[in-house]
Amino acid sequence: MHIDNFLNDKISQLMYILTALLKKSVHPTEVEMFIWDCFEEWTQFNVTDETPSNAKERVFWHLIHELKLGSLANLDNDICLTSEIETCLDFLQGHGSYPINCIGWRPVA
Image (cartoon, rainbow, N blue to C red; front, side, top):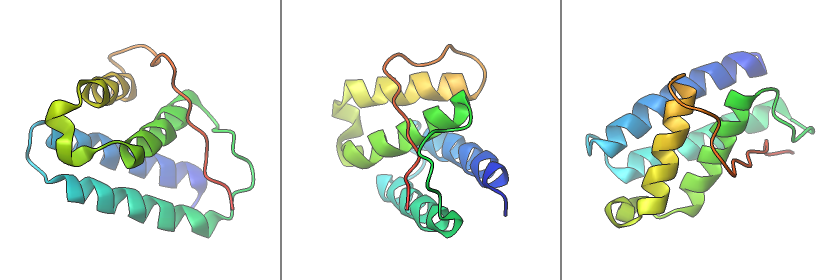
């Protein structure tokens, strides 16, 4: 699989799972498993350049890192993380502008 195909697939999956998370249709552990699966699959590419190829990829990695650092179990009480997720989802869906303070870097080998 090519990196662009991987990213397009994962961005679509991330949008789906985060939309479900915000609607309380999935448990936060599903998101955590998705994140670990992304990291595991990403290591197969042996990437050495941390610079994303476009803005969507940058927002994807930003979200992945924010979700990993944030407390998904307490999402109802974390207004900042909820707002960050919504802003990033809007951008990825083509409805919003590029998120402020978005720092998404590729994990490197």
